[in-house]
Length: 136
Image: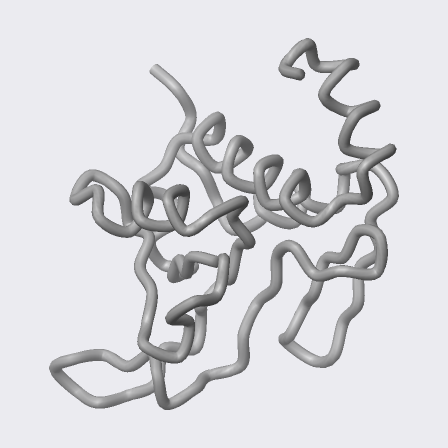
């Protein structure tokens, strides 16, 4: 059985991708490639709240996606914990609460992080990574 993912795995995989810089501002961590964010941990915002209490979620992680179709595939699949909010309408990203990361196995989470990196990496870095991983 595959190991369940942990929030630490987000940091490990994102930080291990080629050419990544990590920016930390208190609890907010942003991973960038080619000067572009691909995974980041959000501060609590009014667009992501607990429907029962109205409390802002304090553990939202944002992952870039390649396209609106990729976004919809993740957020509309009831088998995944990904979601979006009206604030992210038209934005190529999906949200995931840190408290729900364990609903994914490590391979699923790794794929989401790698796809986020691929969506934001420069053409040369992307082509090299795909060639090395025999996906392109």
